[in-house]
Length: 238
Ligand SMILES: [Zn+2]
Ligand SMILES: [Zn+2]
Image (cartoon, rainbow, N blue to C red; front, side, top):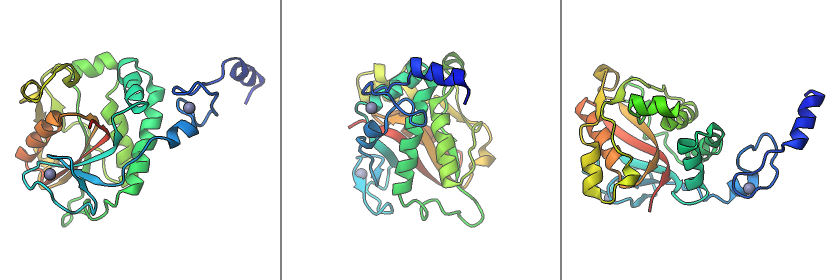
């Protein structure tokens, strides 16, 4: 490191986003203490009623279109970090989110769930944004998290298969389930169905609230021949 770097670093130290403590460079954004305080789950959940599935294999509601995996609950500081990433475009905020995803995937025993069917390997698909929204934001946060999931699970990341063709309102702005379901209906489509036919899909998003978006995306994937869907998110609203 150059002398100038050390001087600049001393004048402008990095502060933890959550507690304002000066952090080490490798921590950036969130300090180790604040990170350690985030409770990280160790199970999957029912996609319909959100019941814990302790053995990961247990099925709760058979008609659920997907099994849900969420790393933590949607509460501060995660709530604020996701907001900083998406709406304040602070890409450094992706780092603690990626670390949370890694920690969660380490705790989950997904091996059996994602073992190949015959010779067909499962794939990781990020939940798409409408192209206009992605252009405005400059990135798709789900893609950033999906990169981590793909690397950690050692599964291929398929980015241009599930696409969004309707620029929907943010689900957070809608009050009830009916409005949220209506908002996202027919908003996705599959470009290359041969890429997902007969496959297990790990579908990645940042947050799950009502589940309407994941349900709609799962419906689209299933109608294009996906065999099973495991939807993984950073946070889950209670
Ligand atoms: Zn801190
Ligand atoms: Zn259930």
